[in-house]
Image 1 (cartoon, rainbow, N blue to C red):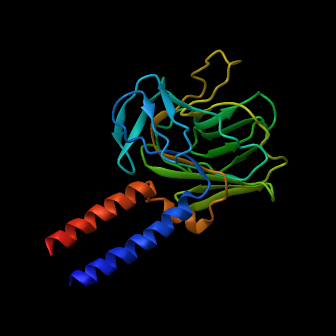
Image 2: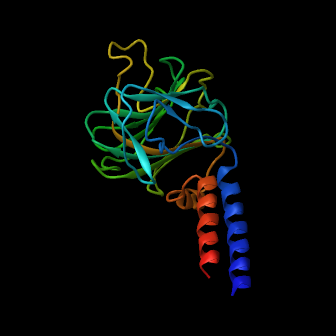
Image 3: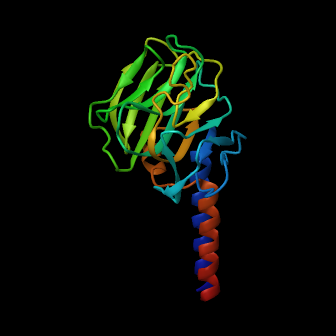
Length: 252
């Protein structure tokens, strides 16, 4: 019996290791928001893009573990991540309070076409994937107030194709007139750096919870998007799996 559990553990960890490797390929940002205290958030992608919480840090129950709550005066800032002239995927879980148009993810260079990347939840529940003056918008009521939804937005540089997925289902796509061209700017979660706006830094700031923010410098295919929805950071999952199987073996 011990031999059976040993073989099962080895096979399971080998499979999980392969799955984790595939999911983390070219991952450049991963916030789990499980800190529970402080004003920093750890980038679990090992890329060093740790974030600073600006405003009041508050944690609530998330989709996986804990989530960070954004009260309309709080946002997270992390270092610049290159998005210009390349393929990328951005993914996060949101539980919006659905007021006006509100930003959940952004990077700003200028108020000029293709120089300000932003993901916005519109007041009517549509999702906008914007390059600035060059935007893709999903149908209204794509997300609902007070409910958790996964947003996955990806851009294929070779085809200039943008796609928006809600809870793993494609809801909008187009062929962009241009690549994203912004080459500078920090990443903001829950807000949008718009220094020319009188409301700055609270222009279109987000109200609600956000969990599991992830960025890849590649396209996630549809199978990967589906499998990622309920997947914790793979390193954490492997540690938990090993610990669980260790307890099973000891109890035999």
